[in-house]
Length: 193
Image 1 (cartoon, one colour):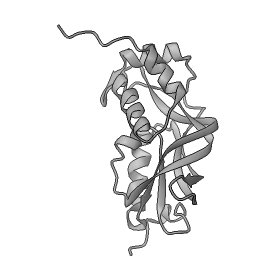
Image 2: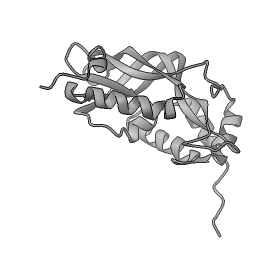
Image 3: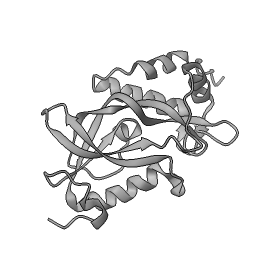
């Protein structure tokens, strides 16, 4: 086995792997090499639309919203198990993906994750919203639905981001009442005719 990237070595679980917690688009588009994925629970944080997006899911004129892990509660998602030899490249990739162009909106944190398929507790990284970021917000469900309905960015429609996340959570047997409420408030997509 190759030694892990020096910065990633301190992020490995005692079992020798890097675990990455996915709670939004990482669930359905991780974009990195991983050996396996496991349903997981993170305590102390919850999933919410709490960051304005003027790049990936919106524009400066019509900002969209993206998910973040915000303080309080608990969040079910996926823990991706990454071989140590890939850990450095994965951390570098995620640092850039989560904080586009070096603009820090998420803090990488090493946190305990409960693997729900085995009951094991592992250490894994999660990208937690930085409440000091200028993009941080706490919109009501109605405001979130309006922004998501109009948001269109480099990664596509904001609506698709919400609906893909919900679809994959449901496939995992996870219900997220907050996301369900926002989806229910979305106006219908107009007919292209």
